[in-house]
Length: 245
Image 1 (cartoon, one colour):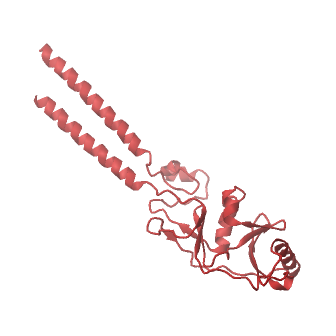
Image 2 (image 1 turned 90 degrees about the horizontal axis):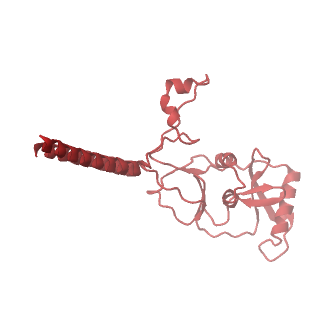
Image 3 (image 1 turned 180 degrees about the vertical axis):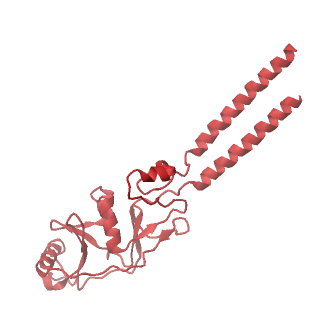
């Protein structure tokens, strides 16, 4: 009887330990990222955001290229906002920069354009682009066409590398995961990182995030079941041995 009580106590302690481990694993899970798209409100307590303190800069544009962009814009928006046919004199082009693939970031509009003062949050991958007035978001200009950044990313036409370039130019904010570990510094000598920092081998993505154990709950349940079965088998064998004596 004494032995059975000891086994019961041990199993109870192990079960408690595994349960606590499971709770910890749940607590360490990353929050689910918001799907890319346009939002009217984002709870920053649930999805903390690191603001970019820089300001996007409007750059000078070659006059001939500026004229071409105006003409392409008029082809899609033939009226100037007053019910009249637009001319290139009615169009203003703000140019922010050119990406490595040759596409440009621009914001074309007519001088008579009207915007609603409604803040929208454009979630693009891990980034967020806050637009103070509805419709005043920059566009990707390439091959005489204008593309929305969010739509391009959702449709798979915008790579993560190009998105990083856009985020830098337009000063996007970035979602912050409080449980994400910063990537380790890469040494100059190849292979040196693995020798000095064995934990590098545990990195599970390109951003250097260390696994947070989101599969631990299932693993913990398996351990719990295994321990319970082993305890039961041990108790049965112990009972059998006592009967023999």
